[in-house]
Image (cartoon, rainbow, N blue to C red):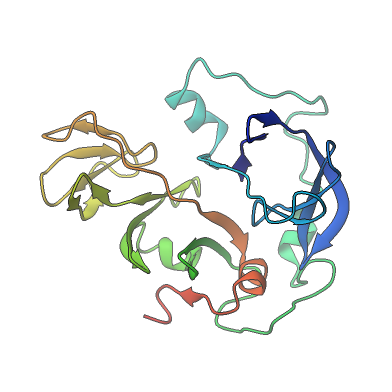
Length: 234
């Protein structure tokens, strides 16, 4: 997840507090030493409590795919060995739920099933990777919001968009997927992960990104115990 560090015109810097809330990282800002939930993007203790960080769109994808889309990209290099083994590999493969265990029991999904979580107007929906593998383009509604979920099975890149363009709600299906999708209403072709219309009547329009979270199931449902699970509860 990526957030802007500017709040009310002032730039803040953040660090890792060493604390967890329901197994999720807690950050702190160095200016006020307030604590912030990584998942919520919100200050949960201290002077800034209740303040929310601005969500910035980002993608989780392979380096090769990113370079293809953005050949002039910069890369953050913090040292260390490139391609080194992931030290969390054994944790990913284990059945344990974080450091402190689950807050709520919910066996609708395997503890460490990956989900894409969306929360809008206090309505939460989890889109399991196991469902997305078979349905990588999903037209759905969360509360009063019509959304689009796209998922690349090979790279597990994902994005969530608002399906409304001007006053029209569009429905989408794969075109040359995973590169592009097409809307059924106008026949416009869209980049599946940037949301830009690249050919057809709506060329130049841009779908608006919706905040989403890629998370283990246990992490998402512990913060959203009333969540709907797409493909199971509908």
